[in-house]
Image 1 (cartoon, helix red, strand yellow):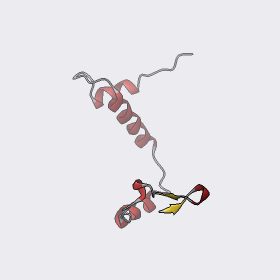
Image 2 (image 1 turned 180 degrees about the vertical axis):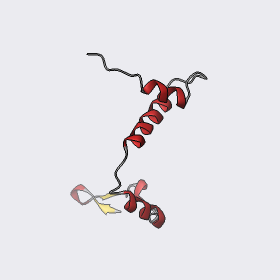
Image 3 (image 1 turned 90 degrees about the horizontal axis):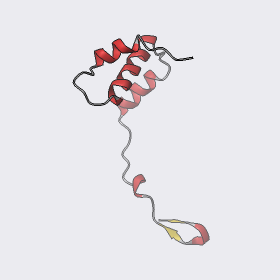
Length: 77
């Protein structure tokens, strides 16, 4: 418990109770990737993955079809 406004007690937030220490391997990987430059190909694949994941469910829509469509997209003036 901690003191809130006017000296009354407030309950600690449950979301911050029992928080475990971060995984050391995950922290090492995050540190190693912090200054890594993302390539154009990686960005393109992230866009394809995002579009595929947000496309309506259909047997006609595959990651390859999204990838192919992404090469033909034009912005209208």
